[in-house]
Image 1 (cartoon, helix red, strand yellow):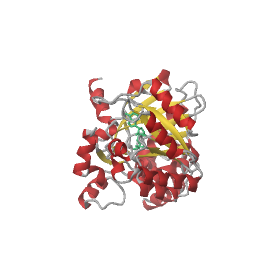
Image 2 (image 1 turned 60 degrees about the horizontal axis):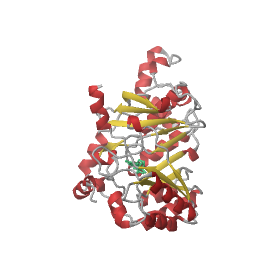
Image 3 (image 1 turned 60 degrees about the vertical axis):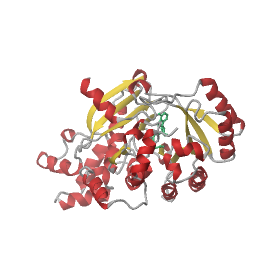
Image 4 (image 1 turned 90 degrees about the vertical axis):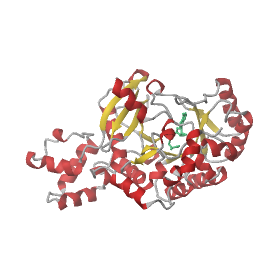
Length: 394
Ligand code: SAH
């Protein structure tokens, strides 16, 4: 079971270059910086925006005014900011609101309750975000990198490798855009206000650490500084970069940590989540329990159910023993087979037995719904190169 993607990325060191705290080739680092987009107000806190306007000789109060449009009213189009003096509007919005996300297409399914947006970034990179409307909440699933360097062989994004980190504003703007979609009322039967954000789109959020943390601060600061979401309604999902989990625990943020475990034993996890070759199951769970202790937040253990790979009763029992008595919840995800994959989702009876054994061990367990399958917007299916190909022929 050597995932071809995993072996390739590991041997060439691609996955290594995207891990934190490992010295990287300075030229590669420069190339990544060079491809970052222009600065945008969501990259800065309010004081930073005010300072930037002062630099170009504009009154600082305009920063609050434009921020209120963007974060408070979800208006992203400078043409609609008619309270800005016409003469200065272009200069102001050119400085604070450069266009970061160019929509390539939007798709909807589940009667409009699930919507996927495909974006082209300033350098041609493609990323995707997904909005999911429920009766009691609206969740958006956003990307933190263009591509991903973690090379998990069952994940569509992992197959393509990492293109680059997204900027803070590129991350935040996905949520602000989709908050605007929700506010327009098109998601029937759901609240109009975005309430939850999950970093479960493309990329490994903790490999783009400082920008992701800044994005969380923007998403949770009250308007007009930020979007005003509750920290408890933000979930950061990770393959398990142990030093970054420990650092996140020290940020004084009460965001939920989701750990993509997918196997309770190192032998299998080394293959399913190649970063396990660096940080083993015991180490990553230790970091997760420390995170739970520091934040008081229950850790979500993500486990994709892959037929005859990780779904055996003995693995359920082993997982149960690892998690019993911990501040944890298991989220089983029926595998979404990626194109050309030799893996499939576990049969329902096998899934039910897995759930039964975990619960018998005293571990709270649910099976995630499979929103967005028809539009390739479901867990692990975000692969923007595919979207581009389809878009060109649509
Ligand atoms: N890099 C982060 C976020 C990625 S996507 C992480 O790995 O956690 C969010 C979740 O979807 C992860 O748990 C990931 O393992 C899971 N996932 C990826 N591909 C999948 C697939 N084909 N089927 C089901 N879940 C998948």
